[in-house]
Amino acid sequence: MEDLIFNLLKEIGEDPNREGLKNTPKRAADSLRYLTSGYNEDPYSVLKKAIFFEEYDEMVILKDIELFSLCEHHMLPFFGRCHVAYIPGKKIVGISKITRIVNIYSRRLQVQERLTSQIANTLNEVLEPKGVGVVISAKHLCMIMRGVEKQNPCVVTSSMLGLFRKSSRTRTEFMELIGEKNVF
Image (cartoon, rainbow, N blue to C red; front, side, top):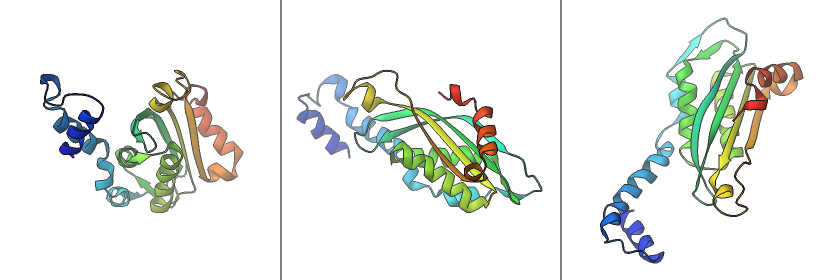
């Protein structure tokens, strides 16, 4: 990867041998490996290591999980917050594992819509809850730095499964508890 980045620097008109760029190919390769490290982890096995059987049937919410990812169309970052809720069936999960799932999927080349669905679907499949809700609010540098060059748009996506889809009361409770008006 370092050779590719070295050549990329030449292609854009830079001198990859100048002092400030001498170590850039290695640093950029290390950075890209970290930003795409989610390909090396299995979200299902992460969740399955922390499942507990508990008689709890109220909503569990983790809000304001910070995330960053790379847009698969331009390989530019998008960043924001993720809110995750589920209503347990018979299983609960260690809450840190939910943030790990967000990290695993966001550290891949992504579109926000797929990222939102992947988090919800994985939790739904492993936990078999009564419902799952995921809302992501993010700013995309591909819109801010290039293209339409707008500074303030915030993209909000949601995935509602089970009771969160079927019951407007459940969905409304979730949205109110995460402060949907202030999700970013």
